[in-house]
Image (tube, rainbow, N blue to C red; front, side, top):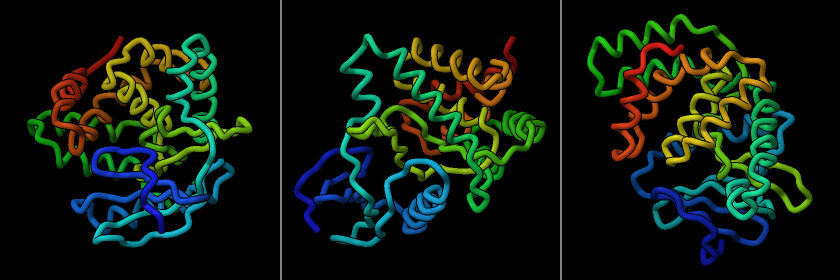
Amino acid sequence: MDLSNVIAFRSNKTIYRDGDTVVKVFGTDFKKADILNEALNHARAEETALHIPKLYGVGMTDEKWYIMTEYIPGRTLAELMAENPEKKEQYLEQFVGLQLTMHRQLCPLLPRLRDKMDRKIIQTELPTATKYDLHTRLEAMPRHNKLCHGDFNPTNIIIRDDGTPFILDWSHATQGNASADAARTFLLFSLAGDGETAEAYLKLFCEKSGTPRQYVQKWIPIVAASQSVKGKPEERELLYKWVDVVDYE
């Protein structure tokens, strides 16, 4: 295995290209169970009709865990948006369309989004009363079983050279309510300081899915609380502000 060609680096993970494969090497602080869970999520998502790089294996190198997958020649949607700002609206349309296609898939062996959110709320440092309100809100939400990515953003979409979109990074995948997944994407744009794209995304998602905006917004405090547990410390203050928003008009 050749680990000399670095193609990306993300928060204590280094991604290499080795011929026709990609090797994602995790830092030593990652737990074995989390690595194996990501690989299992990926394998299960592969069983859907979506275009997903093939999973080839999991192992260790220099006492660090890695996941090996198929290399997809192309550019990320984030790169294309940055390089072609005049086409940003077109790319955003493609992005939302791909997310809606994903939400139409079923993956019944994945963990349930509702259970994950419940656990995350318990783990937060929020006041007990706030946790109670969030649990109550979550319990009242409709129960769905749609495939949710959990980190759906343009950096996790590769547009292959022939134009086919592939979805990467299934570590946070669950089955549940699609509007929770949309709320997460909205927060990702917002946390990146791109409020304009966040608003354009949410408007487009609601229009294309026929979902009332207020319904997606009701998920934002729940998703923000969940993200605050393992999110970046510098993002926590902003996430807590989203948690404090009780109702939307």
